[in-house]
Length: 353
Ligand code: TXA
Ligand code: MG
Image 1 (cartoon, rainbow, N blue to C red):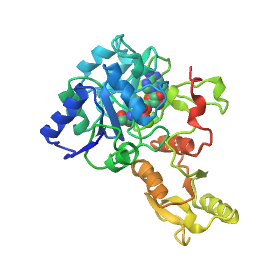
Image 2 (image 1 turned 90 degrees about the vertical axis):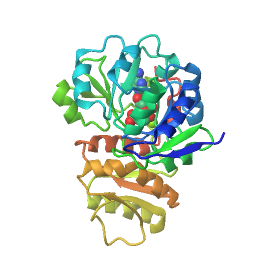
Image 3 (image 1 turned 30 degrees about the horizontal axis):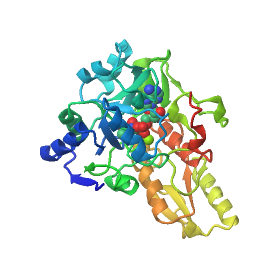
Image 4 (image 1 turned 180 degrees about the vertical axis):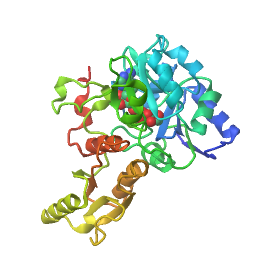
């Protein structure tokens, strides 16, 4: 199929483009659209056949459930058995915003969306294009990140087209996304609540509302043991070349680079996510200017673009220093650790519950 591209203003998108895209959603098609975090690949969440097309286009295994996107809280009532009190507090503070909440689902939500789980993950994206699309479609929109399964999430329309051109009906292109890492996924069916995936709302900010929260630990390397959340497979967000992590300071980063050189890598085969002002004397390396170290928002915004850009330069290996687990640093660590994992995501198939 041909993938139609609508260029739209991120703040006030052309209603004609929105209506055309919404009509495709209502008819059971697939539309990629921007959110404040990353681009999503949307289908009518209440249409099982349409939802299955998402899995086919992304080559995503059916055991990995999708987030359902809503444009107002009234839409939530369709989807969720009485939302807990904590949800109301979270919603008033973070919705719309980069937060996804897992709650008990109603029967109307197809098993294809939730991978058969009794829960559904819901979020209200903070992006005028996403909100306008959901509103115009008049249905909740199920949407994973609009990348091929296991690849770095897309923060531009070009990233989406690189992975999915010809596999989806259209894309609303509103330029690069702001947050750059996906939403925080928090499970409210557990006490205390559990962060299944760190993301755009930091743990510190969630704790201001929820009190104690637990960050689900990384899955054991023995995937037979099962995963706490289907999305917690070890290898994910990965470019096509290996990612090597360094401790978060210039001298540790330099040591990793020296080690790679001693293993026979030429400098121009080594790509670096380089914080501003680090290792300025090193010649010949392929440098992506990542942003100011300790400005975790800026580095989160540029993370996936950096991985994809370095991949396009044809490097053989990508090296990145790991930020501390502070603020959005926690989400960056999570994505980089998974990108660097050598444990294939597909190993988890069938073992997730
Ligand atoms: O920012 C985002 O969240 C983006 C944009 C497009 O909204 N979406 C996104 O979707 O990142 P995806 O499919 O790439 O990641 C969804 C995550 C997965 O880790 C999945 O396992 C988890 O949410 N998830 C979805 N439903 C769940 C459920 N019922 N219980 C536990 N985890 C769930
Ligand atoms: Mg994803």
